[in-house]
Length: 211
Ligand SMILES: Nc1nc2c(ncn2[C@@H]2O[C@H](COP(=O)(O)OP(=O)(O)OP(=O)(O)O)[C@@H](O)[C@H]2O)c(=O)[nH]1
Ligand SMILES: [Zn+2]
Image (tube, rainbow, N blue to C red):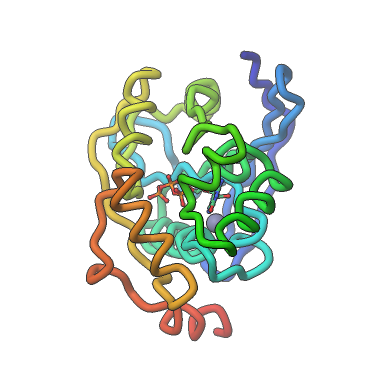
């Protein structure tokens, strides 16, 4: 795996002006991004989010999942802290790609849950990998993370890859009638550590989006 830094620029958002670092994964041809705020070098653990691409949730306002809400919440929390990093990894659809995710959604429309749909298409439930974060973390001078995630398998995978995750912070936002079953499946079958009672409702987030 060769991850190559290409360029950095400013990225103003409603929450803060981040620095956007672009990387190229030479093996896959995929582009990955890290957004940083403040000085992320040094020994003090950095508030972080390792976010996997979800075009439908992140860009098209889909309410089928919680991705867009989590993305917004993570940027907001980093801005409030004044320091942090968000990795935007181009592994759409838990690694199966956008078109296969649409195939999986089609099966889910007919009754399959998110895990069964992947399996019916011949994929594992979660095909993502996180080792590409290591060269990006090294490039940015980040030595340890306080990671916003509900996914203990993400923490385990990053730890196995050599990333120092010192704390896991829940990120439970965006519950709505369209994703309630999906979130229940994530908790029940994929091991996400979250209870639906912990979630803020999507309507709360919508107000922020308009603001
Ligand atoms: N194959 C498939 N991928 C999905 C589906 N819904 C969301 N995704 C993808 O799942 C990824 C996000 O994973 P999640 O399981 O929501 O969350 P996570 O990153 O494991 O855990 P958190 O850190 O707690 O958000 C993104 O790449 C989405 O495109 C689905 O029904 N099927
Ligand atoms: Zn999503």
